[in-house]
Image (cartoon, rainbow, N blue to C red; front, side, top):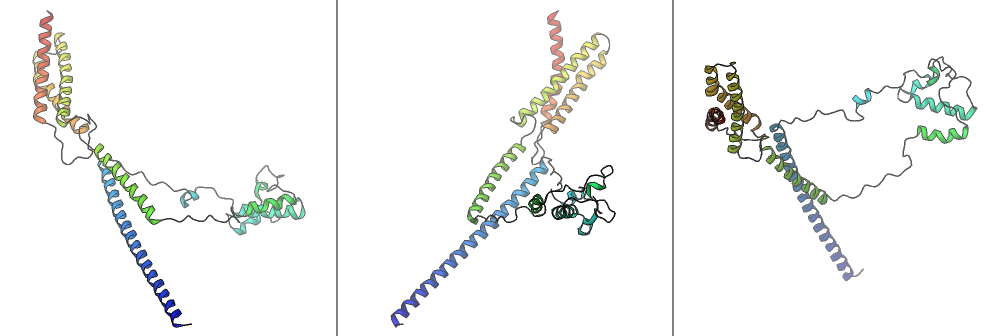
Length: 308
């Protein structure tokens, strides 16, 4: 090898080394970026979980109790197992008893034809032969030799033997992180919508607090006005005296209407998520209720006089 060839080979090796170092640096930077993105996404998902927990506690939604997963030991314990002493299959465990017994019966059917006795020879019952009233029935169906050789591997071999496993498709971490980020953005959007809905009360959610309070107190006052009319009619037939009627009109029914509106606003006029105590406008409610009920009585008197 000449000096020029040696120098060319050295330059080629140096270029390959530099290319490998650059590739390693690029891959290291890519891994660092992926780890940073994963950490940021993890922090974001953790914050979303805490926010959803707070939202659930605010709207009084408890998490459902965790049920028993399918295939768990608790579920498996509920299934009745095979009998513990089923003939010659008891030596191989309670779980493999029926399969072993089936294999032995099929093997005997393939080698020597139909069996003369349904039991195993040790005095113990085997399968259906041990059931009362089934003395003439064998433990398992006996098949011809050809059918037994075809059926035996299907009965005792695990499913899918000989089938090559499917190769897992290559997964790009950057694509998966981008999908996770989009799902986190979607979760943020739905969370903001849920918070906006939780900040609205159940009663007249699109109304302002002042308009809601006026409507509630006015409705309670109107209901009290109907009771005033009932008391006036009762007073006309002599069931209620004048002092009781005046007390209910001036103090009793307005107070009942006021406290009724106060309780309704506290129960259905309060948003699920709110900082502090929402206003209930007590002076306004007091004024509405203590003016509306006597005004209803005055309106009734004017109507009666006008009709006369």
